[in-house]
Length: 142
Image (cartoon, rainbow, N blue to C red; front, side, top):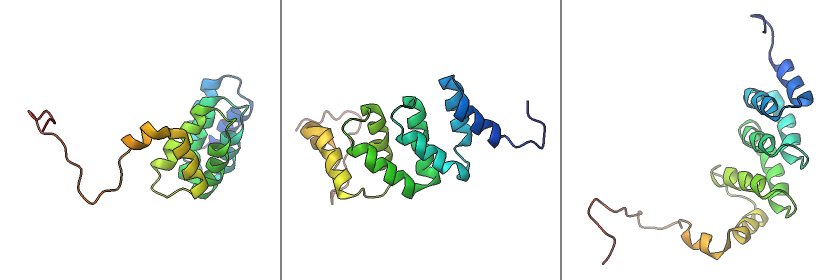
């Protein structure tokens, strides 16, 4: 246990660097997610294809908060890499979609090509009219 004045970050970084148990490493990553000095660590883990998939996803989310510009550089490489894990790519796509910034055109085109026509047709479009919702008792049939 850490004493009252001991700094936990070096211990957490050590667990991330040397830990053999994925759950312990992911817990340490989550605890480091507010550490601005850990952005490079998160960037390396998120980009490393040999890393645990959950650790990569955890690192991606933390990186987006800590260093948005670095996140976008890593995200671009991962989203455009057809050989990267589809779940990790999906994590980055989701983070980009909810990040509030418009992705570079090459990333946007890649995401659209991955989504396919059905997903694009179902995706909400920017419309001048507000979206209508059904009220109780409406069937949606005209």
